[in-house]
Length: 560
Image (cartoon, rainbow, N blue to C red; front, top):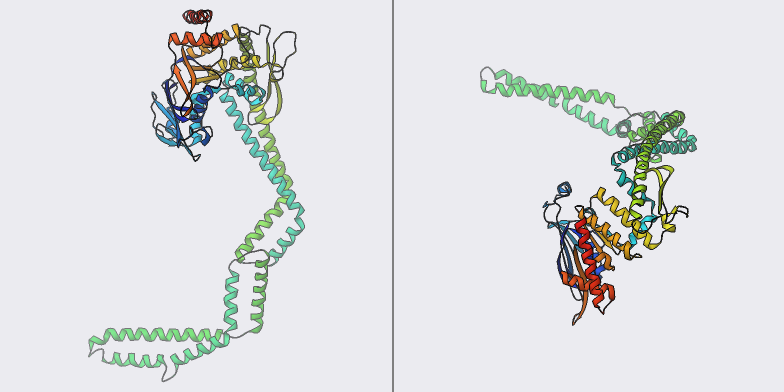
């Protein structure tokens, strides 16, 4: 419930701090006095786009802040999910707009995005302005009304699960079908590519091995010469390192018994000799292996040329990537060869998913049709006292392809009298009838939705007299049912029914036009109602009539 509204430097408002109360409140004032400004400020708190032109001339920023009592609405999970401090008795929403167009939003002093602000705002306030009457033209609004009365969240959730499963299965079939078609168009080329790669008999890592072999054979003479020189240095009969090391080792061993300190060195030298001998043997073996073979080099280079050509053609960096590409093409060819079988499997899966989707849709439709009967009966009951005694109201169902909301295409049909055929409501209802239908719908669904605050902006357009009184009674009944209802009205019959009455006015000052909003006392209410009845010249008859309206309102309250 809205407890307090603070506005500063917003269009014609310098500063406004007003308290609101439970039940049914009314706001009156002359056209242009600033009632729409109050709504505009509230819509900023609902996450509406900010405009720097809304800032009062000469000011750097505007502020709109509202305090709400959430104690009866179990909204703590929203605050926990968004990591915002929760105070059920005093939730503060604030919006600041600067002259450069930038704005900031806060919930309980925590900065939040407009999306979060909009999400919370939509759970706190429903502003019904005249343009919302156009919602009656929209099928999704009509379906939403039926869903609210049906309380079909479980059925709708079950349907949407099967619907998304069907979409997934359907997409899998369509994607594979498109892939098969594309592959078939390229089948000859794919088979040519596969054969080219398959005939190459590629082995992972062979490119690196062949490159090493090619490099070795290309430098065979240099390698052989170096190996020969090394072997000579090690194995020459008298001057080679192997022979000299052997002699040194023998001499140390000769004195090892008489010079024990040299034994360790002798062992090390013996080990060095063995290592040199082994190295010399290894060099001799490699020397015998090295032999320049022009034919072998040509074969190796030819193989490398083939690999390089394939890498360039298939944009690969290695033989491994070529092998991977070959397997990828093989899978494409397999899908061509076995595509019909796989396609049939996917088609069957999609068909089965569609059957389940339609079954869930049928259950959802049955729930909605039962609720539609309730809506039809309830709307007739509500519209008869509102001056449409011969009203006809019906909801028709037609089937369409499965959609996110089901298979139902519904329409609200209306006729103001029993002799006129039913037609889509937006085509045949007058402005006053539309207003009464919308009020009835709002009253019907408000109990199911349980919005804390509902604001009606001139919903009484096109009505007067007894019908206006009935509309006021409906709004007051809504306000008495643990929620707050605020009506912006030009009709004294509705204004008199409010338990709290606010007036919006404007005055000319040295700094320009300024709007004010005040809560009226009982005496001020009489004068305001009298002015609404007779105009600027308030007569005694108007005052008496205003008092009678207020007394009638109090009497109705006591009866309730």
